[in-house]
Image (cartoon, rainbow, N blue to C red; front, side, top):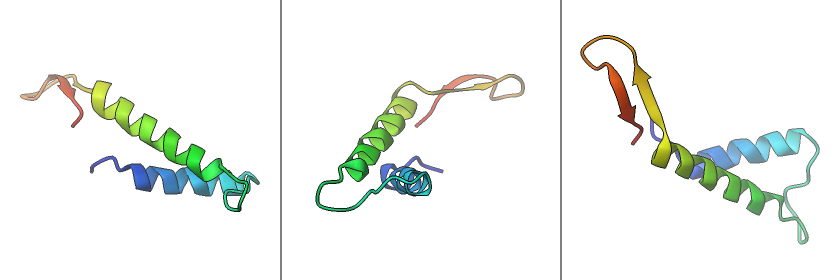
Length: 65
């Protein structure tokens, strides 16, 4: 399953809405903040994430792509 910025952003928007934040409107920048957070999280995981498999023929550390 690929990591997708827009999917993560939607989840962040929903959680912020559930927490009482207003994410839409002329003066709201909360949705822009959610986009920036989603992009940073996806970038960090895809650039630096490793999956460690302890045993078996695939054992070792593997980069997340």
